[in-house]
Length: 112
Length: 111
Image 1 (cartoon, rainbow over the protein chains, first blue to last red):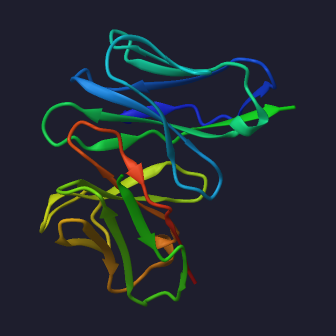
Image 2 (image 1 turned 180 degrees about the vertical axis):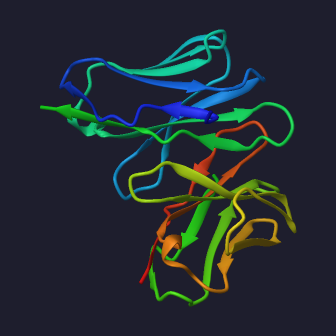
């Protein structure tokens, strides 16, 4: 089982809709999670980080962490065509060497 | 503020040739440094990470190696490139409890 798993997509949503991106992880040690956005040919850029159970909101983005079910999600409200990109989920353990491991990413397509 | 520089941006190399990619971080000291590789349409594969000068951990045993000769310098090397080494190489830095920040990446094509 991979440490971090994502559906590769593409996930297609119309402009203005809510896009929901999901990520599951395999171990229960204390971890932090990150969502990155990557446009084609570019390096990843951080959207949000989440460290504890529950929701965290930043503008149109909401990250949700559920440690009991071992998943983390990213909601994008009022999706725009400029949100079309690949979204990478990453986890970092909070003990030992804090290696950062990424999922394979979900491609999001927002149609006008 | 911290910045990370990675070069070159693109590189075309023949099979069997050597490789040297360099990454430097400014505005910080003693960062954790990472090299990732991304094959076309794939996720980020962690290749090497370093917690300090001369301290390198390898995730994927291949014909690649990494070195950290200075606190804020991280180098990825190969003596002889393979076709399978083609990809998008990304350098990143973090502190112990922060998110990772990436360089602009090097797109390597081995021909």
